[in-house]
Length: 333
Length: 258
Image 1 (cartoon, rainbow over the protein chains, first blue to last red):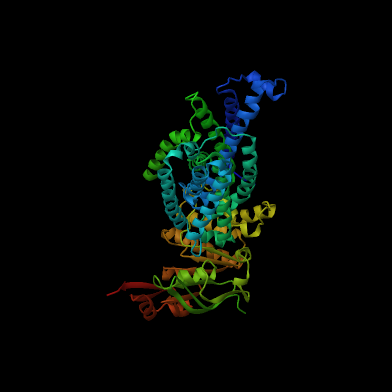
Image 2: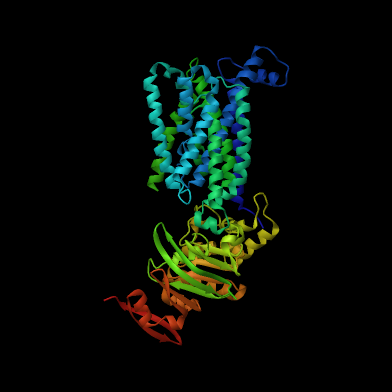
């Protein structure tokens, strides 16, 4: 018996091939473009170890770690969004909904403004802030079960609450706000191999966890009653998957700052292309998440060179209109 | 012996008590329908029996064992339950939905075996959906979609199937299609069926036993002939009716509430 119809299999193979090609293309384009021009030939010589001059340093220690960090940030945010959209049964859910953005933002801002000599503590502080906030939201929303609407409302309320603290900080310490702008907008500037090492374990955990969880996400999408009828321990699985999503998003924002829209848009585009089966949606979202951040960051580096935009700004430029387009489409149908 | 029963079952939502001290027992291999007016607790009873809702008091027993002591997947291997008009993304193909029914038989990392495949195949055959396997749920007719959900529940290989108004939103043809399917499964595989029904005539036509509920309590319980009388219908639904006899089977004609 064939497992899937031919047209489904064909579309998935085509999308997969296109995705991998785009990923490779994005990688190459991102490596060779920038303030220092590196040709394809230079790139080949550097990777094969023939050439070891200043260009080697630019490529291996500046561009490459930045690209890889960006790709992992994209993967984690996209996975996080894909998981949350299925758990909350809401195609407009994103990591911000479980408090990751607000929590990470406040904690990171507090460190940058109140303890400026401890800026190396920004990533762990953002990470802790994101996780603590998402836990608080989860338990505020829990009432015999984590109902999606309650989660979303609790998330919005807590985000507004933490946002008030951030506004206080910006007003009271207006002289120090300058240093936080890049982080708050999401930036991959100056990312090194340390950041790759910081985020890699979470990317691996996320790929594994979301890969295993995909079949449960599919069942959760049938509704809590049906899922329980199929023997799923619904509340336990929802909690585990939500926390995995929070962990993934927290690891991404702790490295790159508040990078919006990837977690919302990438799973959404992917769903339009390959459908809602999470066993495919999850891995494809991960690949597309990586691609989009690589391309957006390349644009952020070169469009206004020598000035560099935070990658989050580029994402929002492209992401916000796309979001509005999705919104108008879904309200029409 | 008690096959599937509940004892002193009470349940509700928040502070509102919907089920009041219900004791019932269902026999193996029978079809039973639960009837009653809106808000009488039919669906709540079904949800408690299928552990979708935790009772505030009392117990549900399966083969003499309390289901609160069983794991979620152990219950799901014995009891299939379909809520009223379940919802799924419209782009799932039929065979994928049916395959979800194998979940209670799977561990976290176990793969889909030949045995699972054969069970899915059997469930699609039994519900007449073998030619629709690659059709997406959104493209099926209402009756076919309901059959797909039943196929999913069958793939669980349950002994008991609990259905909450399986014929809602279906036209007469599809209503009969679904109920005749359940009847066929009951006779051919000995599947025990307990369903909540609104249509009294269909309920009595397809089930040997009617359980009538009102205000969270069981008010009548017996064979269709005994339960479906003019007095009983008035007592339960406040509707005047006439029972007509057609070739030995009874049907209720409703005359109005005034």
